[in-house]
Length: 313
Ligand code: NAP
Image (cartoon, rainbow, N blue to C red):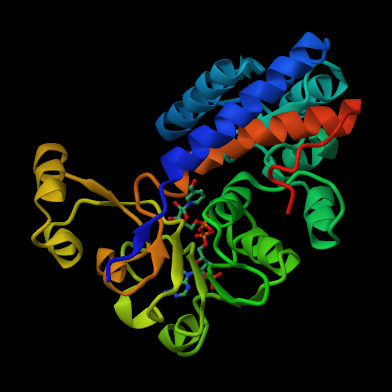
């Protein structure tokens, strides 16, 4: 039987609606949440991401401002900007778009963001809060994955979860959220022995690898839930055929654009999984929605007020 497709666009709009309602109430109480986005230089991909974040803020009613220091900025000068944003009371969230140019010490910059305003959830203080189950800010993509599972009524407690990938931004925080939600969690990486065998143990399999269609049907226990975090652009014809042979819609995109977006999970997995997220339209849309939720959460944690359940694991 074909897997149930977990519609990330639908879940993300549900979250955005809830966030917009919270923002409306907070604004009426004189506490409009504010987000500052810092974009250094002109990286085209970063410009697209930042545009999406600013647009989404406007749509849910969050005050937002964009800072665009020049590519050649020094660590010291960027630090001054962050310190200024840290001090401003009307700014609840600070997001420094990565990557930063090579002359900037990215670790120093990220450490300078006030943990209470760290809506990316990357500051070591928030990493510690997550691991010790204290209220804090959780990275957006992992938080989005948990929202997909919970809102799709997929049982987590007591289930075997396998996370492939151990990055600080996706793999590790996802594993921690799943542990906090009482799953039994295994984290895999490039040195894991018998990866397909370990993955087949999973009731919930999360793929955050960055390799197009690497998770094939022999990695998946029939009926498992598969969450595909990967976002890979396929331009090679042979690779396209390995993944999408016979898929007329994809063929059309590939022919017209010369590329297509694919996750880390091979589309054939839909024949064995019980439920899975598509790419595009799965985890991706949740990331910005959770940034909005995090900004509201940061405002409430910092300025007082009932903290919404959303994104709290
Ligand atoms: P990353 O930092 O490159 O980490 C990749 C992880 O995969 C590493 O832990 C690596 O193992 C592991 N890995 C690589 N090759 C492997 C193999 N052959 N077998 C087993 N494990 C392997 O990537 P990331 O930042 O976590 O991102 C992962 C993917 O998610 C990318 O496609 C990225 O574009 C996507 N992403 C999507 C969103 C979204 O909003 N949808 C957000 C963030 C990221 P080692 O640690 O041993 O090297």
